[in-house]
Image 1 (cartoon, rainbow, N blue to C red):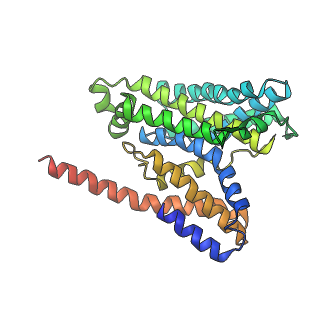
Image 2: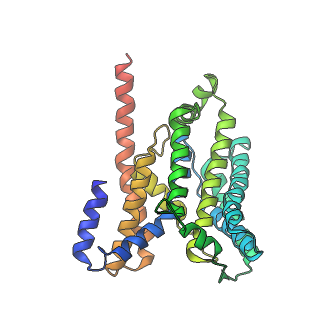
Image 3: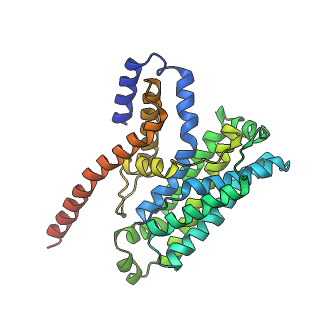
Amino acid sequence: MFAAILASIVFSVASPFFATAGNAETIARNSTELMLAGLGMTLLLAMGSIDVSIGILMGLAAIAVAHALLASVAPALALLVGPAAGACLGLLTGIVIVLGRVPAIVGTLGLLGIYRMGIFAILGGQWLSGLPVGLTELLSTAVFGLPLSVIVIALAYFVIWVALRRTPYGPHLLSIGNAEEKARLSGVPVTRVMLFTFVISGALTGLAASFYVANYRNVEMAIGSTLALDAIAAVVLGGTSIMGGRCSLLGTALGVILLRILQNGLLLMGVPSLWQPVVTGALLIGVLALDMPLSRLGELKMKWMSR
């Protein structure tokens, strides 16, 4: 939170366009897909896994949502097409990683290439543009004084928070992240939990696809190209360990906000958008450089205290 406030102060001084209601709305709108995808990535990293294909997964789910709208499907049903498609793709990812015993980074890199070719084959090099406004209007509808989009994101966070804090899923997930084989020997249904987590991550990314279509009303070839990097950076900035066993949903939300503030502020200062992945990558490397030694110190402390 302090970092986000400090960045906001710096950019407010550096650019007269930063501290405006319109720019705040832009930052919020640009954060919606990353908020949802980051929530799924939080679960995966806490489990000691990862999915670098989520950007392309979002693209495929967005195509499904777009075709639903073009087929005159009711906006409320079109909204659900995204998470349904994402859940199916997440299950496929889980089958490859969990049942196929393929390392997550290798398996999801392979799926990224396959999914990317799928987008090219479906779109044929063309954009889906000028989509109907029904989904946009639905998510903009005020409910209790708040846009429906805000309520949907808040509900998603609340459901995951309850699952982590009030059900066996949370302890099982973190125990797998700490030591998968020990969790298995302790009676944790490791395979089921891991498959379920990939499905949930896929569904959340698919929901992000529905938000993307509502926000931009088009689907282009390069959709989601930086989503995985942004999601990993935001989650790690928020305090979730990339080694597994530790996560923070609030930290993820703050990490998303900080990342989008930095990207928006740099753009207003005249830094080309092509440099955004460089900034994000540098942040990720810096946080990991600090996190891994601290995690190691924590492990040594626990071993010393257990003597």
